[in-house]
Length: 354
Image 1 (tube, rainbow, N blue to C red):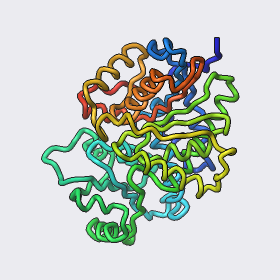
Image 2: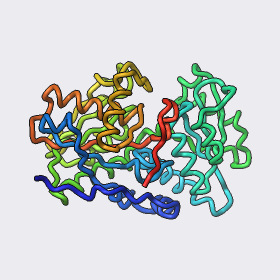
Image 3: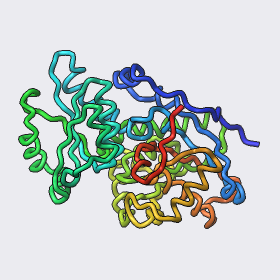
Image 4: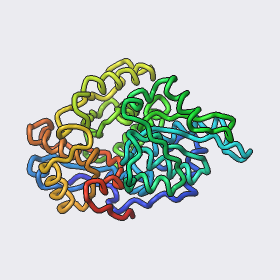
């Protein structure tokens, strides 16, 4: 019988603790809060594969999951540049996302707690009725600005951002805007995620858990790249891509990130791969087969998932296990990346946290 960590619910992080985290050198303390929980699931048990889940979703219903770690790097950079805002200068943080964006949701919540103005640049024309997510972020104080899908494709260009900066009329902050890439990606986003990988390794080593592989859902590969950089070399890692046709792009993103961090020796890194077979038809697609799997998994384990990321991750892990990807006796750790608020877009209830 393998030793398992405390499987009780994770104690949510308070607003005070959140504010304190951004003044610390790393987000290690918060990362340690979410333990690695053994989650028995019959379909995997029958194959001799043990499933563990790091319940980052339980840290906070607004910013829990991987979003905090990506925001940690960006907001740390923001505060280095502009301070804590105590001098009255309130330069807004602006970022990009869709109508159900977990990233904008987390940014709005963190901005509210830290007293930093936030602006959401939303893909598509303004709808007659806002999604539940956009209603929430607006209530949290985020200003919404809608742009066409064509312009949204240029979101990372200096030209579009300059145009947006003029349109947003941020004269009260000397015309400045602090831009965060969509999803919190980029070098700053990877910084907190590397700590996530380091803490996962420490938790596995300190507890003696039977875990050989760490699995992550990947949209931009920011989280996965950071985790790979932080993991011990005796582990392996797999990313389940949630978008269609981006497997090679994500692979290149991870390679570039590792090279930038000076990690080019394969002996210093875990074996890793990106799997592009389980996107279920494309980003945010939630076909009947995946919906049925989510219902089965939640009924048996009590662990909720979001349809865009964690659901595809867990479904992909089961499919890989059924193909014999892992030998019997293997332990696999899945990172629960939060985003449960997005369940509302699929007529699924949002569970309480705690």
